Length: 467
Ligand code: C2O
Ligand code: CU
Image (cartoon, rainbow, N blue to C red; front, side):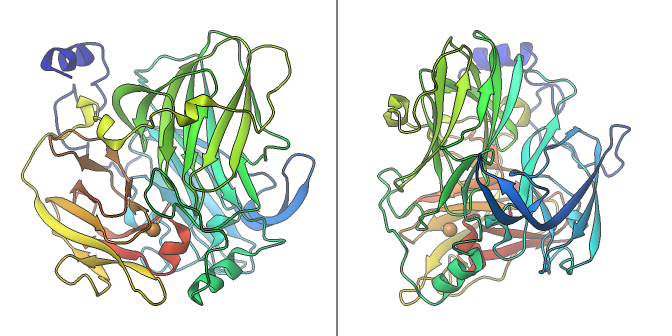
């Protein structure tokens, strides 16, 4: 995109979110809130969910997967009361939100875990519009049904579309057959992956758990979610990967998708056939719907399984869940294709660089995050100073891939030539190095971890701290 293109984008009004398109850091997080407040009660409890003609027991926020969608206008306050009716401690983490430290839901770091029969009042301003989600941050609870979407609306939404759908992807253990805690215990005991499969794209095991269910909005392929709209309508899809161990390759049969946001933040739009979404990542796409009935497929990368939904704009039979979707085999969106929208692109700037290594022992296969100088020692904390722009560079020395997530911030992925997307979760492929620029403008202790739940629970976690 040349200067003329950038100027055109700014003139078109896409560059107005953080002050007239001036390359800058994000606006400081306001703690004040506004009139547009939202109150919600989240009860974490054993429950029964309907997967579509099939009831299964799990732990969730209510009787549906995902939990209730929370919507708030940017600048508004979310007041969420968590009631814990689980037989374990729990917390709620607001994934991706530049939140006040005390509301981050990081057990033992930002708050004491909420005990069984206890409660906690979360109250925070949602500063940035975009697609987020919330989930339990204790043990393997995310792999049950303890998650839901969080949409922060832009009161001055620059995109135009006719409708929007939130599309939540999940690999899911219902807890009746296999229990997520048992899976973790197995892995901790050095157990072999149940179904080792090679991903062609990710260059290493993309995930190792063969799940009993792959879900789109809580429905299996046998009784899929059906999205209905009129033909010709332009729809915004808010794609969220809430899975614990699965990246999904997503395509809508017969359509191309225009990617507009990565992890809530706008990018220069790119048209793609298919995109790969790691755990904890979100992508927003626009699509203009044809006339017909189409498969929306989320293929579990490196696993022989898929999640499936139906997009319907006319009568006619739905395609079978096994339908061939050629878009899935076309070129997949790459990080290098993405450029932050000028309004959220801080531009180049010399940042201090901190080298971090994603590493792993030979024997038990546990992975961790280390300082580049001491790759064989797990690093408990990455020391940074307040008010700096620091470049974290992650080198993956394992043969697995890791979606690395930082709490409480959004960072900019640094492409060698500058101008990468803003994100809070970035996939680091085996053997590769990915650098991200973080502004330390939200004091606290922040978790930095792999969003493969089983990696983080085995210790692939550190914190970024400054005060
Ligand atoms: Cu969505 Cu620390 O996680
Ligand atoms: Cu990992």
